[in-house]
Structure formats: structure tokens, C-alpha cells
Length: 72
Image 1 (cartoon, rainbow, N blue to C red):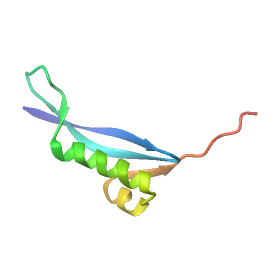
Image 2 (tube, helix red, strand yellow; image 1 turned 90 degrees about the horizontal axis):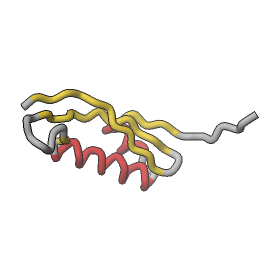
Image 3 (cartoon, rainbow, N blue to C red; image 1 turned 90 degrees about the vertical axis):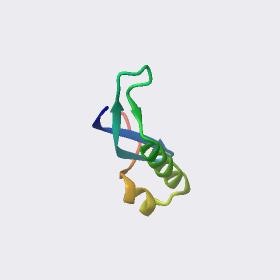
Image 4 (tube, helix red, strand yellow; image 1 turned 120 degrees about the vertical axis):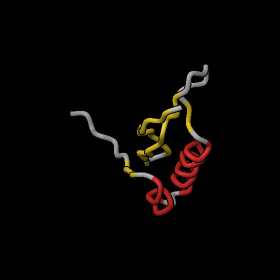
């Protein structure tokens, strides 16, 4: 069993977050997969963004505010 770091993106409303997780690789049909802790971390970040609790989201991820770009 080995793992490799990867960034997953979570998008909720006008916010997006960059969450670092570890993908676990094995010689099984379910590989690669997230640990339970990393899956819960993604859920926690998504929930915090939904609530608008940026402080909680920033404790677990890098948070961005999305703004529309006017086409010219």
C-alpha cells in the first residue's frame, strides 16, 4: 500500500477550496481511494463553505472567492 498527495477542489456557491488529500494505492479494484479522514475533511470543507464559515474552511484548505468575468 502506498499513498500520494493530490489536491482536490471543492466548489460551493461563490467559493472554491483547494484541499490536499492523500490517495491510497493498492493492488485492489478500488484503488486509488481516499482515507476516511480525508473524505471527511472534504465534507467538512464543503459544509463550511455552504455555511459561509470561511474561517473553518481556511483551517483545512486554501479558500478562493469566485467572481464572474465580463466578456469584452
